[in-house]
Amino acid sequence: MQSLRHGYTNDTRGDGSVVVKRYEGPDQVVRHRTEQAMLTHLSHHLPVPRLVRTTDAALHMEHVAGVHGQELIDAGQATRVLRSCGEMLRRIQSVAVPTPFPEGSVLLEGSVPADAVLVHGDYGPNNMLFDPDTFDVTAVLDWEWAHAGDIVEDLAWCEWIVRTHHSPDVAALDELFAAYGHRPSWTERQDAMLAKCRAMLALVERGDQARAGVRRWQQRIAVTLSWTE
Image (cartoon, rainbow, N blue to C red; front, side, top):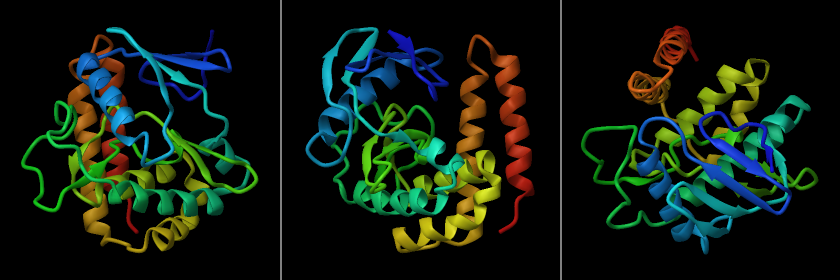
């Protein structure tokens, strides 16, 4: 099996038929358990990889055809990709939150809003595969950070991914909000981005390679604070 591109947190490998994901870093047991539960829960609701087999160390999933969202953005298709991201987020938030939620969140602490929705936790083109002709979403990947949370979280993080990794395409974010059907205030969105960044900083501080990760997330927090709409 070959190591797959766009896998940054874990060891993810595939052979064109099956993808094997082995969890690494802090909270790996909780993240493994959360993703396994979410793929099972969502299998009849959303385009997610089908579980083939599970072990204590890894998930074995069916390979899903499609082109990675960030590759399509780099190829000049940001408008169509982000439109599909907005449409898919509406679908995700229409799915009932599992009760009880598997292990809660490994990222965000605090009380769950009364009107909580299903939050992917790392939502954006970085975790989506698309049909390159229709731009339909063929799979939403990496549910290990899923939790019940605020409606703005995934929308704001999708924006953060674009601003951080695809800054020339920031104008295309209008398509994300139009397809989603709502554009929360800049304050709400920036606050949600910063909350996630700070949670990631706290997470990497507990990791084996803390120094590099801490520096990276401290820089990202500073950059996020500097943004204006």
